[in-house]
Length: 348
Image (cartoon, rainbow, N blue to C red; front, side, top):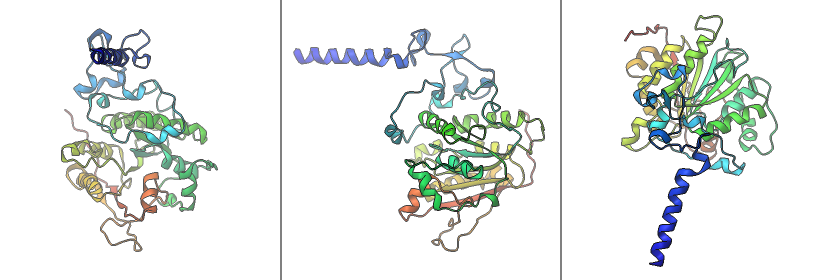
């Protein structure tokens, strides 16, 4: 009897904590994630009017769930940032919602929105973009406790062979805590107005982001501020067959890139898992991918003999890439160029 009462008390306590912890309440004291009148909600922005039914679903009064990237930031110690969750389900309802953006985005994040864009899809904690933008804009810093930044100093910067001299840099990351952490590093590196990180699901928000970016230009030619270089590096492989549909490179993503990119613009893919690289590559050699892109391998004669043994065209490695190289493991890469076939928007 005593054990039963103790168990019941614990159960009652855990249920109470699960539903009324202040972290899960909105300013009116209503609980997040509970159906009906107690659902945490915000007003739907005009920009969020497009998308799937799962993205638009909300209450009858025009409210909807708060996107996971807009939840209040939780304070973490520096050590805890190494323990971010590695896997999420991008098809779950909350990750199918459009992200919230400042009303004046991209002006809020970039000083010159007429510049071409470097787009890194799945940027993780942003170390690669911070190093890339820092080197190209003379904003490198000696940071004693940043192992990755110090390790990349021995790698040659070959970006001038592939990138315009002036660019903006945008990283997209689906894990909310990771994207918040990446954005917090921008000011510390002195890269505000040049580099920005957005927490979102690329397969939900990419078209919207690029439409806003191109539409903000005062040139309105679609050529100056296009995504000139896109990288997708070491994405979650989602090994299980049932999880293959969660992979980031989808036919719709390829079509969206084809819409906004111009002839000669680059898509760079790499992974330490051959199957994952081939799954991404397949999307670019089939359907719209084959129609709008052509593959170009930059061969590395010093590398091991496999069909994806090309050099990294940018020279600067990602954090994952550096770890793989240091272990003596292969990295599989390929590169696609946008061809000259014009993209025709089909009327519904």
